[in-house]
Amino acid sequence: MSQARPHVLVVDAEKRVRDRLVHELNDGGFDVTCVDSGLAAIELVKARRFDLAVADVRAPGMDGPETIAALKAISPDLEIIVGAARPSAQAAVECMKSGAYDILEKPYDIEDMKRLLGAAMLRTHLDAVAAVHQASAALVASLARSDFPERAADLAGKVIYTTSAALALARDAVDARDEELVVYLAASGAAVPAAFVARLAAEVEGASSPVRLSAGDTPELLRTDEGDRFGAAIVAPLRLGECWFGVLLALRDERLPEFTSQEEQAIGIFAIELALAFYGRKARRARGPRAA
Picture 1 (cartoon, helix red, strand yellow):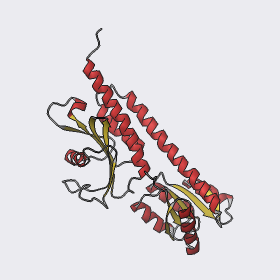
Picture 2 (cartoon, one colour; picture 1 turned 45 degrees about the vertical axis):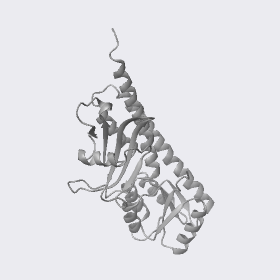
Picture 3 (tube, one colour; picture 1 turned 90 degrees about the vertical axis):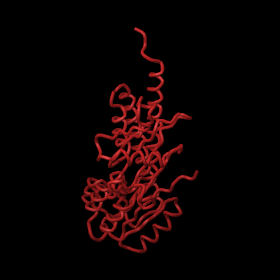
Picture 4 (spheres, one colour; picture 1 turned 180 degrees about the horizontal axis):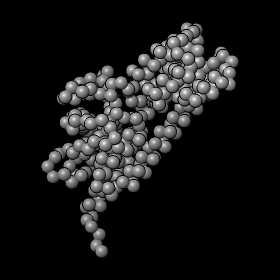
């Protein structure tokens, strides 16, 4: 399977700079989208997800630090490289305080830019790995808790940013007597109708890997019976071989960018850890209480 190319947002008022970066970065393994102002960048990041950004500190509409702060507020994981002609120490400090990854002098040296973009992507990847590891460790520590399913749904929000998270668990996974599918909602997110969670779980029944949904492609799937709408979802099966324990659901509302393939992968890894946890709990129940 081919790996998804990192998506870079270029913010620059000069068309020749934008055209050059599209050509050079495309050849370097990146997908590139360009806008000519900070305001346009903000509107685009509200609607779409980007891995990286290259922003001219003097792009029209907003100054560099303002643009960086606004972009990071919308998409905290977005790594931003700021371009500046002969940047002053004060400008560099202000940009870094606003959340920039680094400063690159203009005119751009493309090889330097590619190295910086690669380093920024690596930091994002390492942050994602650390988040999965921390959530998995917390999961193991919570195995004996009576509210383990709710705790597991909450931990999904530590792996990636979600509006809401939920688990739809098979009856055998939680010793339910009547329901075929039992829904548990994360305490930290917005409420989600149980019927909506069950419907999404049914849509991906039989899947062996996470399924990423967006309102742009499947608007009806992401609309609740009450008329509320979500912008994006990841539905990850909790499966070990032939054992199916249910699904983990991560949701974002329409105001937020869609999930990325990297976030899908992170949730997929956490779902495997969660399936292992339910398998262990099931095995302990089958053995029964230990003799004193």
